[in-house]
Image (tube, rainbow, N blue to C red; front, side, top):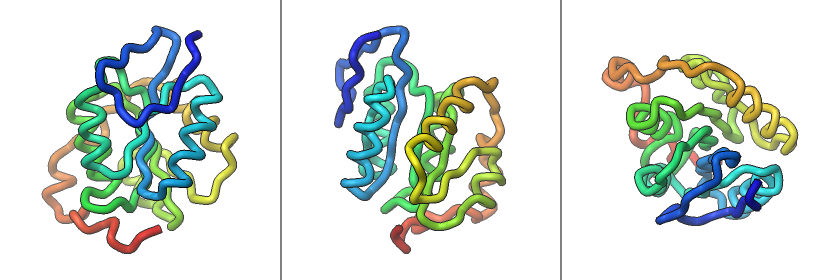
Length: 161
């Protein structure tokens, strides 16, 4: 396996077939950088993004698969849930794992996605990713009716973590 590197961007980056790509999205720099480094050491190719818009741009630029999106629920601008829904419309094979300092488990369960409450041990994150990679794809949570119901708002991340 090639040595994975934490990358701030994905322009022109090609990966070996054995690397699995994680798109990590969190607006807290120290947390994001620490988790990205630990996931990279675990053998994943990590694309780190500061918010939903940054994540969508990195996903657009990424030439290969994005195997798992790990996103904070509460992000500035577009929420982690909205990001996950938009990403799944474009990349049906991407698995979703939501994280937050608040207990948003009920929200993740609504979409059939796993959830980890911060703080969590890196082994819990690795195990959550491993389980996601082992399961069959699900098309749940790509239904635009969920967005039309007003359940998810543009300002869902304003409260901060």
